[in-house]
Image (cartoon, rainbow, N blue to C red; front, side, top):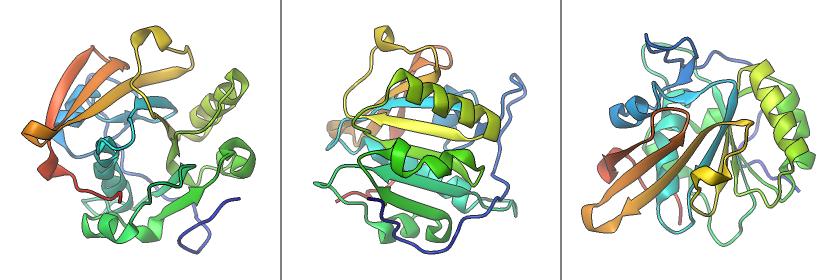
Amino acid sequence: MVFFLTEGAPRLLSERLYTPTHTTAPRLSSTVHPLDKALNGGLPIGGIVEWGMPLGGRSRELLLPWLASITTPLNYTAPGWVLWAYSWDYLSIYPPALAARGVSLAYTRFAKTTSPLEDLRPVFLQPFFRLIILDAPAKLSDQDLSFIARQARQLKQCIVIIRNSYLTSAQSHALVRTRLNSHYIVEKDEFRLDVLRGGSPTSVHVPRSEVTTCFS
């Protein structure tokens, strides 16, 4: 079953795009310079991003700059919609904390589902959401990935699939354009982002002060 924490039907709005001069692929900018630089301008639109983020390590906080940038854009750009679908029930998302860091809850939807491709299939058939986050789905077959990749390409969406374990280069799937790992370093109070695919292999460090805690 799917539960939305806010009401109102989404409508198509322009998203904030960042297109660096060295590539023709449109990107969703996080507005955090180290992240955008490592990703050649941001998360790619029109494809799948697979992101290794073990639970309990604060890594999901790294997504907050994108949520804020899309739902509360700068320079009078129209806001876009974000959907975060998750299946875990031993952690909870605290929406007021997101709002305190610039994420517009009016353009953000949360859904709890153990079968996102079944429960949320209409979402993948319409260009309402600019960013769709599938947080640790129990199972995604090759057929599911093919469907998601096709819809992301046709509808110009960015779809992020979060995994609860770190990824390796050997696990790469042909349909996944970008593969990342992130890790919180307690001693330095900073995050490390590792780019495995979707750019030159690199690691960048981002102070936690640039993001915030939204999971409890």
